[in-house]
Image (tube, rainbow over the protein chains, first blue to last red):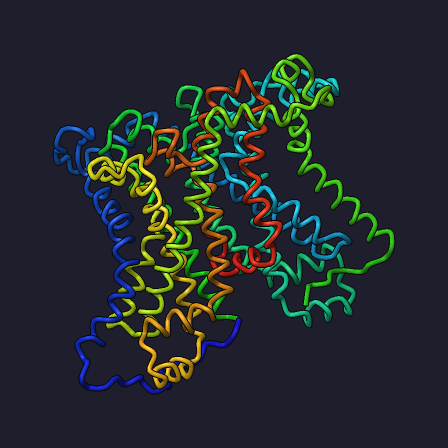
Length: 308
Length: 282
């Protein structure tokens, strides 16, 4: 990164005194188009969602004010509670598997022959869409001729062959495996950026002291890498909490509504069942949780930037 | 300046290399095996083992069938959306960043936060009103409508990155341009934008990839085959033909994933730099 110039010290550009009005207006002409796009397509709908969450609204007749009814109903609704439980499972798994594996791969590939090639291959799944990954893996998990069951039957473990995407809770685990396959590369790259930024001196010193292998990783490298572990974990929580595409193409939240997460439940209530006020309340719940973690995430990123 | 870890005797080095190789092979194995299915006829696919090598070469037939089932328009649509929306978005975002940083709009922090706040909330927070708004205004299921939304949702991140870039540009450059009689518009296009080529290209890449890979907003804001983006077309195809014509769905998914994969491979270095910019969020 190039150093930021201290522009506050630079002299202001003074325009001839004859055109003060124009000078006043010009900056707005640059900022307003972007601001209008964001305000019209993002901020305005957001405010409406917050408002709608306090109403009963089917999308056709006029909304009626409902206070906190929707939120109270949510926590009495078995679909919502199951969905909430699934979301917690997803979030925890999204941290444990892709982040841990990402860290292991980053450590393993940073010092090995063909390291660049390995990194690229592991990252490739992250370049395709979650929808595409979901479609491909629904073939891998197919009961009759999916690759996984074929291999299991081939090595004499046909008892383990399952209806991966139709049994509960197996289907959630199958989808998390797909998610892990896709996300690990991204986390690995973030850890590699972190590893590259580590100062070499403490590591050299530790090596001279005879600290090697796993000991070196545990005592020296991991502690120095900790800010990146925190950032990657928080990012994984925020992303894991919002998963939609993958579930939508693999199970649509089914069978029934057994594998829904909050993002899927929100979509189903709003766009299939047309309970828009109720759906808005779910959106608010998702946002509050995601915002809390985003706050910690941004704070860690800014702290890390300030440290560099 | 990479972190060299541990001693490197020959045996240890070979063991590491071998385990890394096995790990990587394991990672690509499911998809590598699945690719074989894209070569088979639907009958061959359902009557022989998925692990068996293809007996025939029907890849192009499978792709052609997928194309006839609606993939063609999805592919073209997403290419248009990805290019047009990311270019417009990057230009508008660069203008906003220029106005905030270089022209010092009053209350610059307010304008920065106003635009940046568009990226803080999860998508769920604007889906339903957006859908209603699109129905009311006739933007629903139109190309203009979905492009406008893709522009809006990609602006905040682009503005954030461009603001960071413009903060690093020397003020002497701008003063020299002013002395030469250039107005702000000329300074923006002739001096600032050419200097910002690297971040601009990077942002267009990131946003093209994001738009290409989007499913959710395509589902919510479009309906007809002639407007819907590629991922919606793919998901729809899987729902309808997934059971009866696996090979063409697999072939279509592979072809539909190719553009972003190729973009990454061709421009890897830019992408890795991009990760550190936004730390991978969205």
